[in-house]
Amino acid sequence: MPDEDAQRAISLAEEMDDFAAAIQEGRKPEVAGEEGMAAVAVMEAIVRSAESGAPVEVGSL
Image (cartoon, rainbow, N blue to C red):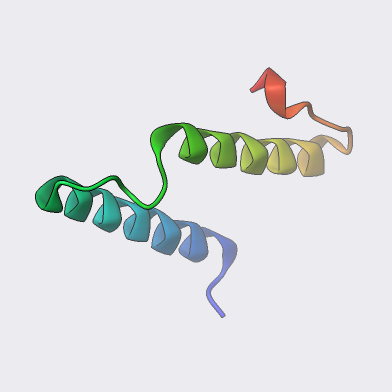
């Protein structure tokens, strides 16, 4: 199983591939911008919380 950084890179590459294909095919991407940003905020809150040991509000990101 890939390490955490490798998995992030793979996920990002897959999202970029889908975004590029969506542009070429004239369709909406699998994950829209707002959904993608919400997912990034959740992941960032998880990382910050793990680093600090304290809860992090997703809405603060």
